[in-house]
Length: 156
Image 1 (cartoon, helix red, strand yellow):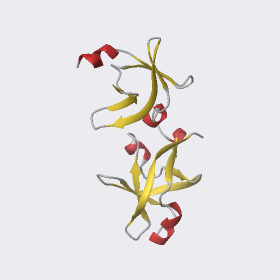
Image 2 (image 1 turned 90 degrees about the vertical axis):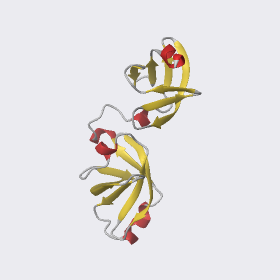
Image 3 (image 1 turned 180 degrees about the horizontal axis):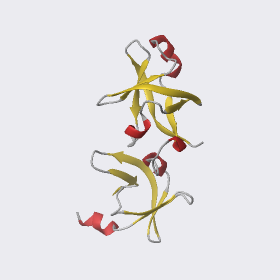
Image 4 (image 1 turned 30 degrees about the vertical axis):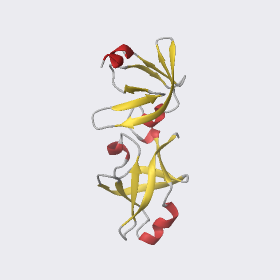
């Protein structure tokens, strides 16, 4: 099992045990859906309801049916088991990977910038779109991302 960080529970929502989850992932539709499990403090919670909100996800877990029962999970980090998802990778996995342009070391991924059109790697003061035109290969075994067409970024 490989647990990946996907966000934080920021507070309760209403009185029926729902909580607000501030998501830090680009795979919200795959992660936050009824029937999936999330992990909080290594405990497994089944999602029974999801509501989309512009700022966060409103999640209801099995067995948490009252606002008083949310106290134990408030302000906690939320994780997902990668093996439960049908995706190649989550962008959060790219943080701290080494980045190379051919044989030239560029730096480590410091942050993932999420946007509506593309997501971006932030490497020192360089920002690279996570699209096929700029990402040659992601080698999870060796913790390396190989980029290409870096000259195209400087021309714009």
